Structure formats: C-alpha cells, structure tokens
Length: 117
Image 1 (cartoon, rainbow, N blue to C red):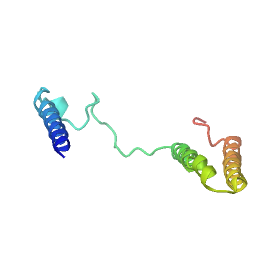
Image 2 (cartoon, rainbow, N blue to C red):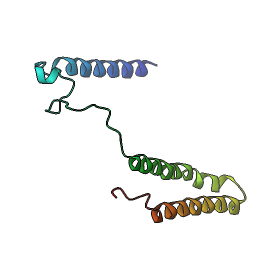
Image 3 (cartoon, rainbow, N blue to C red):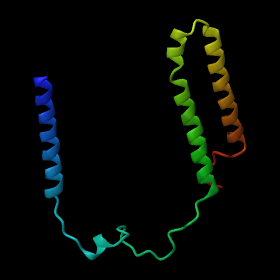
Image 4 (cartoon, rainbow, N blue to C red):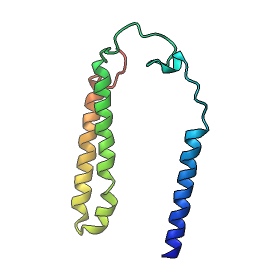
C-alpha cells in the first residue's frame, strides 16, 4: 500500500507541474487579429453556412460502412478458438466479406467513389 501511495503522489506532482508549466509558460500577447473569431488571415465575406456537396457525405458514409466492416471482423480469430463448429464462423465471415465486396463493386461501377465529376 505504501508503494501505491508513493506512485500516486509522484503522478499527482508530475501532472500538477505540467499543468503549472502549460498555464504560465506561454506568452499571452492578445492583439486584434488573435481576438477575432477568424484567425485565418482574412475577413469573412460570405456566410459560414456554405452547403457541402452531397458526394462528400456519400464518401463519408461509405468510409464508415467499410470501416465498420473491419471492426466487426476483429473478433473472428477469437470466435474460431471458442466455437466448436468452425465451418459456421468461416461461412458467416466469408459471406459478410463477399456481401460488402459486392456492395463496393456496385458503388464503384455506379461512380459513387468518384470525388470530382
């Protein structure tokens, strides 16, 4: 228990030191440009509500879909060791990969992955 208290004390001291340094080391020199809501160097001329292209959202949804495929396939090696019927696990995973591959080919052929017209 004594070692735990020592480690906890050291961690709290290091975190406190880092917070102190982060707060007091940087120079705080406010100016008109730094205090403006847009620090990019130019004044906003148009509204900030510029509509995005629909294609941007389509590519984002496709990325999430195929990224989710990877996350759903992560437990596959673990399930191969637990479940006694390995054929069932392999069949379901191959079916899942083939289904998503067919969807990818369909989107590719219909031009859903083309960024610019």
